[in-house]
Image (cartoon, rainbow over all chains, first blue to last red; front, side, top):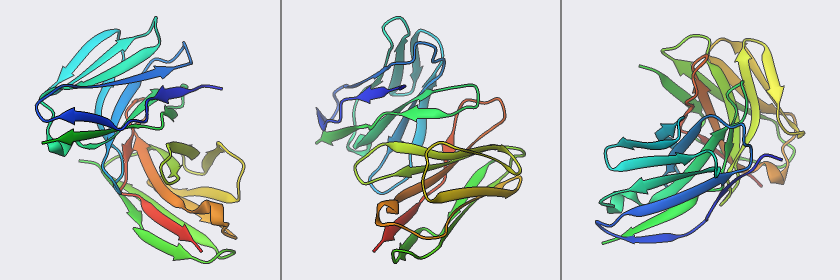
Length: 111
Length: 112
């Protein structure tokens, strides 16, 4: 059974600090990795994707991938109250494009 | 630009009643389409996916079915709803050969 694991949180982060979210996956053959943000009552929104080992930066977000250790992380710099949401990690499971989602990490940014 | 629509936005249905949820995508051709369900406080569960008109693959056995009558239309149905069918139903699309999936606004279904 392919699995994607995330700490459910909540992760409490002071405003302006760095939020660090982790995700591990079981399928060593996984090639594509995604982070979605989901506000309460809303649908998930794609914020980052990464395919290669290393770091990928987009604004205040940095995704980090380590395929050897089978983990992917998301850093949110200068956290803002508007970053308070649940962050879903997703892994592409096969050639049809199916994604396997983790249960999500709730982030709460406190002023 | 591409847009994905779902309706209705919310739905309250009695147990045993039928269901039809619709999803349409604009601004792209031949997308891959997906139906997910998110139960309260839980992750997303893939229900169905489709790579073309009339082509449906089911991920989990259940009393739901899906159809794709047109290239950019995806329908989720049930003949008789169960209490356990309550949840947030999300339609998503991706381009052929692309990795990223984009979600519609969702339908919140409550079965009483």
